[in-house]
Length: 435
Image (cartoon, rainbow, N blue to C red; front, side, top):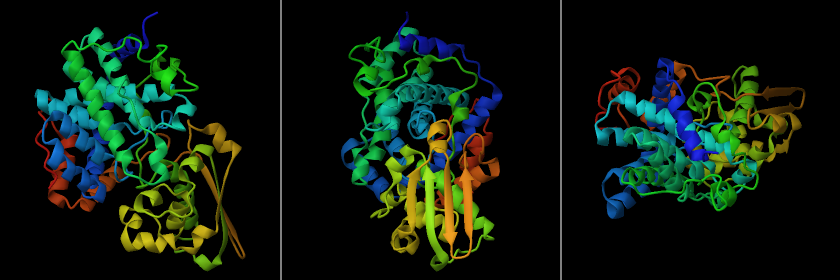
């Protein structure tokens, strides 16, 4: 039997691309561009930029690393549920910069992005739930997505594609331990995955060989990283592209908090979108799936990053302030919300309904009890999921909000969005200057 890498190559080459697939890629690229811009002005983003200027310098690999790392900082980037990966922050920096470097058309950039999403998500679906308990899927499977996007642009042959997968897989890395300390390593994960995958493909183009059976080999990726892998998921036939299965985040927090945020906002709306008096709430009960609580059960977040990974913080915020935005997780607003009485009134638990649906659906239920009333909201598919998508107007509003956060003037923001959404498919990608 052919290796998984070779089967994957044939699967990609045989998939058809429709015009709507390329249009979808434009929308996801627009969302990613806003995430990237916002990341550059954060504390972590400034550290990365300063480090890059001092030590790394310029060049294709450095540019890709820095853009990918910046893209993953604000917790606003997209997410593919079945693989639990954030494809945009890894794939688009590679396809964007390599397309410019090779002077290829925008259409070729979009095609490469479809390939990158496809491979990253398929490998993510194959790693199994045990992998995600220790390893950060975006980091470990991202190397394959980055290598696939680069391979498409480099027009690698079948053998060279296989080598690119082998060279990518041997560089796979990314542990969840950073979350214990709310450290900055998560952003490093995206940068490394993009740079390593690109490097793998560039080396393969120069006849630098990689392992044929990097996925299924006795000392390969699944054996080393995955206690319960499903290798067949990597090459399983399917209609359409994985990009169309990917969710776009409306809120700047861990995606596992979003179903509960949706439920909290629905309860707030039932109360005519007014601020719910804290003193009248006796208890808030959150029921969701086990993985969400394993990642986000933190009633005492002590930093911006920790607050974005706290389901208690996010739900109390949504109930008290409404639609969460980046500023709600920073400075005085962070300090104020951390001290909210509501957080201490929240209990969390897992529910069989949500556990059985995960990872195909990410859901939650919230029950808010007051002295004389009770409000209940059940969310089965979070806002931004394919079943409940952001419309184009909502997506553009999110993009402009992120660009505004980054200090980008409205005229330039509109120019960038117009170019991404409406440029001629054969155009070359211009130099990106967000300010």
